[in-house]
Image 1 (spheres, rainbow over the protein chains, first blue to last red):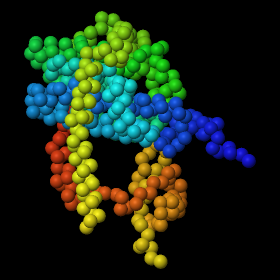
Image 2 (image 1 turned 90 degrees about the vertical axis):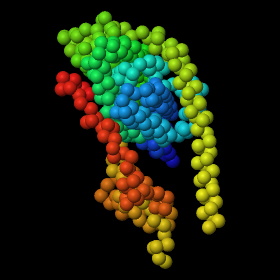
Image 3 (image 1 turned 90 degrees about the horizontal axis):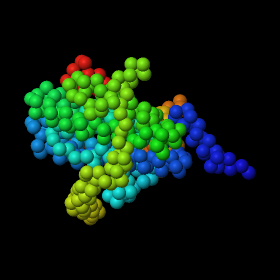
Image 4 (image 1 turned 180 degrees about the horizontal axis):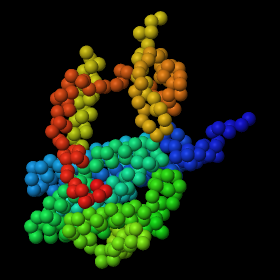
Length: 318
Length: 95
């Protein structure tokens, strides 16, 4: 008797065929354990980044320079919380529990984007984050809209749509400062100086050293390599900096007419790995704050539970 | 036996791999398994779907449209959640 249809070889072949024809993989489909593991790692890391990313920006809500800026920043930080939720939900479709993901974040087992381990020292940093950090994130996320895993890809479509204002509000802040007083312009330049290189690091290590890229491309989780995305980001952002009248802090940055791309200098990968390993300026603060917020919220979760139980008991008695 | 004693199920169909399940209608059935079968017979006679969800109607909690005004009111005055709220100079591309 043939147990053909359920054999691993058959399931693997079916999975491979789906990937090859650019079809989506859905939660109830069979998938290789390593594919599932890679997605859980990537999606939960992405979710953690949205959530931790609220901290550096939330830092400036009370000190936003006008009511308009304050309302916009609150709306943006609210979006990040929502995006974290979409992503946690997508990871949960793979069989990972929310509690486990939170525990892994807090223990340091799971990572989040290293960019959020840099401090927001001035209001201009809020502009630089929207313009550069969201700009880089959007570039990555536009690619992920075509990811092979259905729930992740659909979450990305929603997130990209909602995020369309994030980069613009950042650029608007930068433009206002760049056209302002000498002091304001200097603030904008200082923010660009500090956020430029960490933004380039957001795309991850160079292709030659990226352990996951090749497999992720084969599985069509990713569609472009780290270096390809980084190059595109530099190509798109450099003219924007020119328009602002600001200088990108890279003496090697120059237009290569023949290649049709900007050439740029070497990223300091030692710094990148230091921050990944937990030695960035704000790593400890970010996790401490997350743990505190989670613990401070315990009574809310308990109260909600108690309320639900009381309501259920009342309904039963009635 | 009256059909009305059978619980009502809401039916959601994924028309194509990669798309969301979409609500298409409802039907009565004795249990989930039967509901799936009936949904297949009723809603996918012309290959409308590749995947069906059935959910007991009583498990669905819905907001009320007549309360929509106050329910959605907080969102009405937040035009800055849209990209079109921000002016980007013509010279600036890719934003």
